[in-house]
Length: 287
Image (cartoon, rainbow, N blue to C red):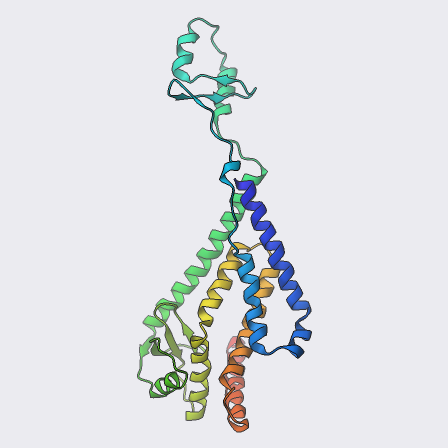
């Protein structure tokens, strides 16, 4: 069974990696032929392929030896069927007693032996668990920091943008008391986190439009799907490439969607605000 699981994972990883490499190599061509939204959602094909459900044939697992007298018969090293300890105790008095070496050998034959596929399976599973554990710890810590070092606020501009985008799902708005870019976080209890900075009315409107466009398009769910695919295929560098390219395409396609109904002047103000935030974020990284 472990052999089949590892082979399935490797096949899916190879297929998804090849598709990711294909998209990456043809990225300049796609940039000329398709819009940002297409280039964003095309990476979804990669993650769906990586997580495609595969059928595991449980019939291929060798069955246990048939029972004899209600007791399971095991096999020794030479492949000969041996009766359990109760029956051996009866015949032990008639036959020559086993030496200590043969007894140890017989006990070792009953222990499960790991082959190469078993080792690969447990190594892969350990990597998946560590990837999910580290990512989960980082996420929970950041959520705890948000609840401890931020406060809920009333934001009429956010409500206006929500109505403009026809968003029905509820979310809370909080002001952070620590350095952070504006962002949306939380799948089931979404939070719009805003930094404690002064923004003009135009800048605030652009920021909220950008973040709520992410929220409307379920980009958070998309990113969690990519995270899960990355966890399953943690050993494949092409999956990391796909995740990074998806994140870049996500921002570009969000800007394209947010400015679709704007005039030229509004687009300039919007992009000026986004560039300003990007520069501030880069400056904070080097502080």
